[in-house]
Length: 111
Length: 111
Image (tube, rainbow over all chains, first blue to last red; front, top):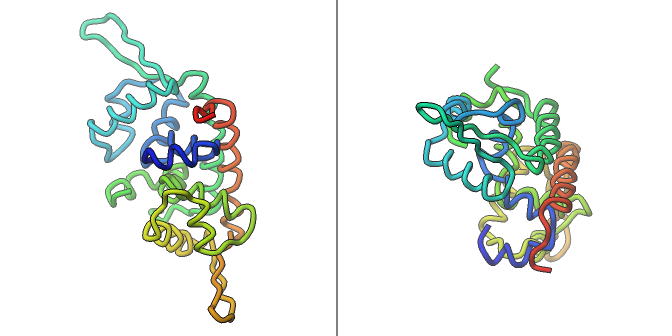
């Protein structure tokens, strides 16, 4: 959202949440991390079609917003994994209602 | 979403729903129409910062997806109003969970 809308719509909690998650990939990143903590390369494989640059930007934004946290394991080579925080887990009811809607109202036309 | 992702992620109902509503304005249009049917100019005033072109595109997409319907009243000048369909009403649990999350986890910093 641009600065103007941030100022004018930010009184609405729906708008604040939309600013955080309403983009092409973020709901799918949260969907994946709901299952287990994952490495960058695992997320990249799961989110078919995402570019490394976009995934990196989305993860950075989610980390800055305290929705996910990264843990660096001191191995050789170092292993970095991402997981949902308590705030991130609090997004799961949104993902669940999105799943419910899609299941009922948006049939999978690729089947 | 681009065609590649459509093909590869479309097996997931979360991805299909994200494709429909995960953009800057759509959740806010649905939030507004949840209250009552509205005219274009009323939506434009409510969604501060949206351009007429963007609002028009979003409404067209939602109409094509059977989430909203437009009614044209034979007045002079003709009056056109938008309202949620049954499918549109089925999106309200998503808006409600977004509102709940925003209220608890995203304090309004403009206050």
